[in-house]
Amino acid sequence: MSDSPETAILISNEGAVRVLTLNRPAALNAFTAAMLAQTRAALAEAAEDATVKAVLITGAGRAFSAGQDLGDPLVKPDTSPDAAPKDIGHLLDGYYIPLALQLRAMPVPTIAAVNGVAAGAGANFALGCDLVIAGEGASFIQAFSKIGLIPDCGGTWLLPRLVGRAKALQLALLGDKLKAAEAASIGLIARAVPDAELMSEAMAMAQKLAAMPSRALAETRRLIDQAMDQDYEDALRMEAMMQSQLGFAHDYSEGVRAFMEKRSPQFKDR
Figure 1: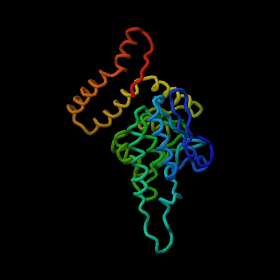
Figure 2: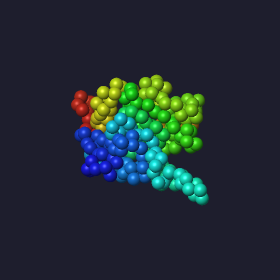
Figure 3: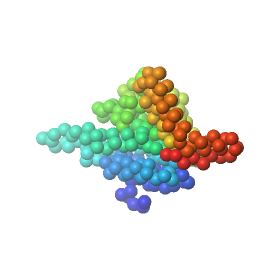
């Protein structure tokens, strides 16, 4: 894929890691409808490629993503006197909801490497990844309340599950900037690292995950998400059902053999 101005997502590979770079640096990688469509296409391509075992997402330039580009025609209010209000719910139905669901259903682990600001939908897109690592100069902002909106791209679901109701409300209602170190300390993200080490640390994390059994990792994510709305016994029985399925798969046999033979396993299930 070329680096032309129309290319809002850059795609590269580091071994079994697919790297997706949000690429509108002049606009702090703010999302447009076209960029959201390209992001979905890039994720779909990674999901279908059996050689991809992890996906690493970051931003070009000095930001991860400033969220929705308010100049996009789908959301920019028409200020003419007789103009009808714009239904921005169409943007969510057509773009953000499919993107958030697609990200959460990826057959391989996803890692967000947050450089600079992650605001609004940009923050919640990052938080929708399985693991989030951020440079110390990065920040997370639930900016929605400042323009009369509510957290979207999964924000109302993600925030209370990550940090609890009280902190979720603080972040969502006040819309204050949260620095990476504090985000890590409250459990919003996995780690904060020096800015200069962000990509090397994120790639090391992605490479580690890429060497692990992809299907088991994806099912772990699914069952943890599902268990948040289940009682204890239902979660136990779901564990038993999935453990039974995974026990018949290649990766379990390979993992046990490799352990017994004191060698590195070669996992292949997805």
